[in-house]
Length: 340
Image 1 (cartoon, rainbow, N blue to C red):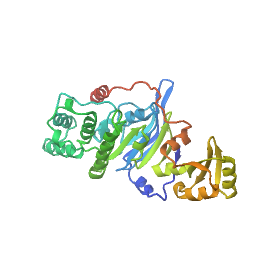
Image 2: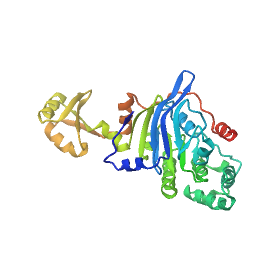
Image 3: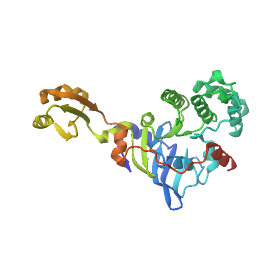
Image 4: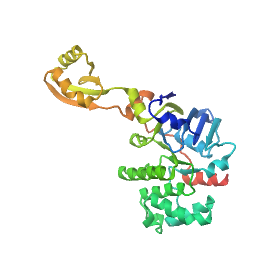
């Protein structure tokens, strides 16, 4: 795993704080298949931490172990100081979890769903009304408290599930691919709610996603592929690994343009259709590059490094939609957790 140096980014001090999540050499095997292969990382209190990777990369399996829904094959993991293997009940009291699949009862109202959860998690009776009111306000559903969940849109139901996960004031809120199937506008609204919760409630957020734009909201990102964390850092640190911006110039004489740019000391290479210049602050450099080429430019394209570039750099492939063994449904996982 490549863990980037945060000495000059300000994130180093946060990492010295007691960990909200601490994982060492965590492993999970299913027969001969190793779904999670010795991952290690720590998440500081109040941090938004993202697992970025394709389907089948080991994201959900890791979350299942951290939330005591699956037993590790090897290694250790602690949530708020409690060991997931030896102190599972203490861990469960300190986490909130939003599954990939909806687990609400759509024949109950929003408030009834929350009240039922409050009883299950032992929220003191005297505090229930205030907590239900509070979490509905956080996800902007106060005006729908008395409505059946069956009348909610997918985005509203997802936000209610997040409110439910926050009801018992967890130390860590786990969000496992929480926006699958939601439109971009609803996804953006949901992440606004999560950011508000982090700020106002001080919750640590651990999310898994295969959406690049979603990972950008995180303080730090761990890129995971084939059960291995291949890189970990802030979005800016990860993109800095890729280095310079690129400026693609299509001209009426690419050989002449290539020679002129090289003579001027530019870092440049020939590509399929034109020439590519590697430079800092590509947009600002365009006028100078056009001047060096000396005319005949038919198109210009500036590209800044993205998380997609980072993923390609570390894995050699685009983020993919591999078929993976079907996970337990949210209801089945909830029943399993309750039986424990």
